Length: 223
Ligand code: GRF
Image 1 (cartoon, helix red, strand yellow):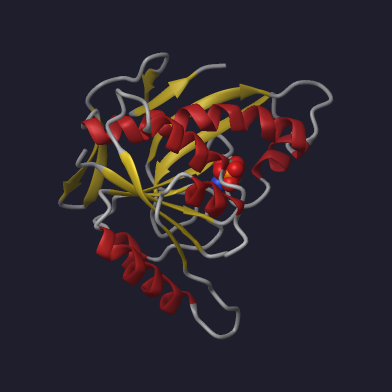
Image 2 (cartoon, rainbow, N blue to C red):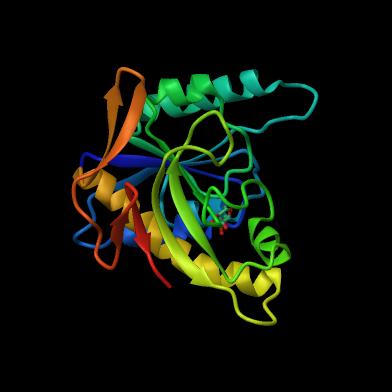
């Protein structure tokens, strides 16, 4: 299989697990060639090692390194693997313009809200604090501005009376585990493409995913 991805994590790695399980299905269009973390304690690294996926740790030491130096170290670590796509799956560091440019814009992220709502940390708690009736998850291409890049696909998840941030997070997470592998497979097959334009780049959806609708140039799965 020629399309391979690098997955960047900082924590437990449940989205990594979902990607791995999807990648082992006979109809998968991608495989994972590397898991990279900024934290040696990230639970997802163990999962990767148990499943014979190469791992790397690129730590960022506060005060010793600026963001630019750290991003260059990330690029240096990733480049030999020549990933077709870099997937941020709970990677808690800011990616810079040089990183994005190095991988020709082929960098995606999963975020636990319906962007552009509730960017940044604790998105599920932000949705509850806002009194929202629904939230969800978003896969988007990464740009310099955090959680603000072009949106590819979203799954809408209801918020129920009495939800805590933990309960809502786990309800959203189940949809993340479906959405992220579905989008990666679609990108690997060319059903979703990032096309260069004179003013930058734009997303083209060549085929709508099962159970999704095309709305405003993005794929939406309703609750
Ligand atoms: C997920 O909720 C993801 O949307 C966010 O960070 C969390 C990572 O969870 N960016 P996991 O490490 O994949 O379990």
